[in-house]
Length: 298
Image 1 (cartoon, helix red, strand yellow):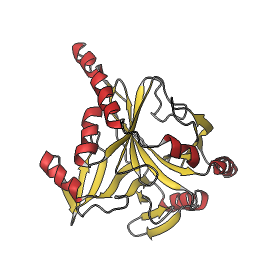
Image 2: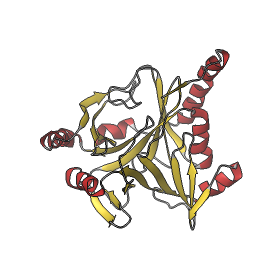
Image 3: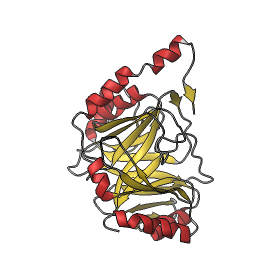
Image 4: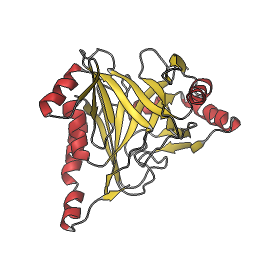
């Protein structure tokens, strides 16, 4: 399992401008690449929507060795309902804490030196007020689960993750594929997991020849496969193979062939400009305002 890598978490965003400001100016991430699509994704990367959408990858460094965020924006949808499925991303960045204070962005110290803040849309981030480490400062993604042991069994026994910590009293566990990668934290929510309409997706890579093996294992174990192995095209870039799974609580999990993904995910030096140009050309807010209508709520 050493070849598997934690790649990114997918967020649906309704306000692309404010979201870009949060990631760029507050967190201090950079745009790694930006892509526009005229129709929905075959693997529902943008959710269950068929129309025009965009994907923006943001992070502290290249996707080869950093865990990043994928921001999906569906034109015409202004907000999504949060559930209790995504509980937060924790990262180390004293600079982000200082940026938030300078910007007047709401911050709450939840434990000594750890501040909670929210990205537009209500997604929680936990900022450790320390000097940003040289390696990837993104430490963990926390997801809510209904049955901790059942989820740990799925992620460790079926998906091959190492269990780093397990605390029965606090009903939490920390798992991952490698010491130097972003970890997955599972926390019991004391009931059913509600994904709302804002539900995201966590992505990992593996060697291309592992993909059909993962699919076969999930079929054998009667586990949910949301999208069977499929090839996804990005205009002018590499075609990648992916399979989309769902864990016992319905959290979406993407596995992508590593070789093609490394080619697809090369940093685009024009990423910032492409995003800014797309936002400048997006007159959907103006159109809805003139019609005295609101964008749809998903």
